[in-house]
Structures are given as structure tokens and as C-alpha cells.
Length: 189
Ligand code: FNR
Image 1 (tube, rainbow, N blue to C red):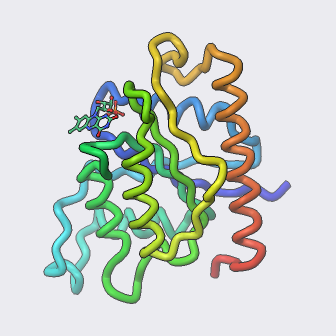
Image 2 (tube, rainbow, N blue to C red; image 1 turned 120 degrees about the vertical axis):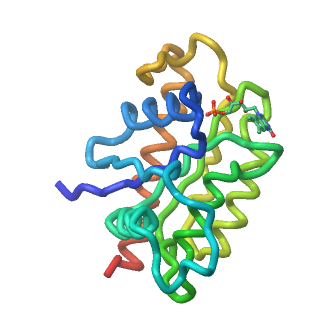
């Protein structure tokens, strides 16, 4: 069976992140042929073009981890109706140096959870615009705006509500199909 390596970003640095819990749930519910590796973002300095001739090890590890992935998944909160700074910083690192954009043609999907009813919808629009410029091949449907309610997720990522579990399972199944489709047309070199 062909397996796909999925690198995933958690857009929150919070030790109590609900988006990290959501990432655990997604991994539990995903098809068996997806293998997940977290791509850390909390150890990166703030990006500057001054680093372009000599990327630090953490930034090289970030780019290598993306290159080693067949697809990338963003599980992120919305901060002030936009992308959390730590995640945007990681994307900026990965997109450079000029001509070495790690996201070029990369299968990608975006999902996020918020205690508010909009469920990161506005933040995801910001993220999608950035990923579009980075030439990532985004899954456009289904969209997934998770209104995080107490009791629906355990800390370990078990989902206690059947309809939520079914929705998230479908999302990951569609991401698997999307990844396979993109890689069929644009194989990763
Ligand atoms: C937030 N939060 C928030 N929620 C939302 O629905 N829309 C928003 O624009 C914002 N903005 C925002 C900015 C900042 C700086 C913080 C710290 C928080 C609330 C946010 O959704 C909530 O704290 C989540 O728990 C964040 O996700 P994690 O870190 O728990 O994964």
C-alpha cells in the first residue's frame, strides 16, 4: 500500500492549545495510509533576508521537513482575524531564499478551531491567500471551521460527538484524495 507522508503545522505555541488537541483528533481519524510528522515552528528566530545566504539549522530543518513531506496540513487558531505570527514567520522562512520556496506545488490543507462560532474562518482566508502566493496546491473543499466546545474533544484527541468525528474523518479522507491527485499530476522530485 502506498503511504503518504504528511507534515503538519500547529499554528499555536500555547501549552494548552485546542488546535494541538484538534491535530491529535485528525491524526486518529485519518486514513491508515497517511503518516504524520509535526513540523515545529516555535524554535525559529524572526525571519530576515539577512539570513538568506546562511540559513540557521532550525530553518534548514524546517525546509527539509517540508521537502520530506508529500503534503502539509495546517491546524491553526485565528489571531486577530488573521494568521498567528509564529506560523506566518515559519511560512516566511520556508518560502525563502528566493527561488527555493518549499511550498511550491505542495499539496496542502487548512483547518482550525476556535472557542468562537466563526471557527477560524477569517484567519483561514488570510492563510489561504499566503499559501496561494506560495504556490501550494490547496484543498479548497471541504472547508473546516471547528467551533471548539468543551467535552467534544478529550486532551488525547478522542472525539466524543459522532457528527464531529464523521466530519473530521471525511475531511482527512478528502485530504488524502487531494494529495494523491496533486502528486499524480505533479510528482514530487
Ligand atoms: C485570539 N482568539 C481569537 N479567536 C477567534 O475566534 N478569532 C480571533 O481573531 C482571535 N484572536 C485572538 C488573538 C490572540 C492574540 C489570542 C491569544 C487569541 C482566541 C483564540 O481562538 C483562543 O485563544 C484559542 O484557544 C486559540 O487557539 P489555541 O492556541 O488554543 O490552539
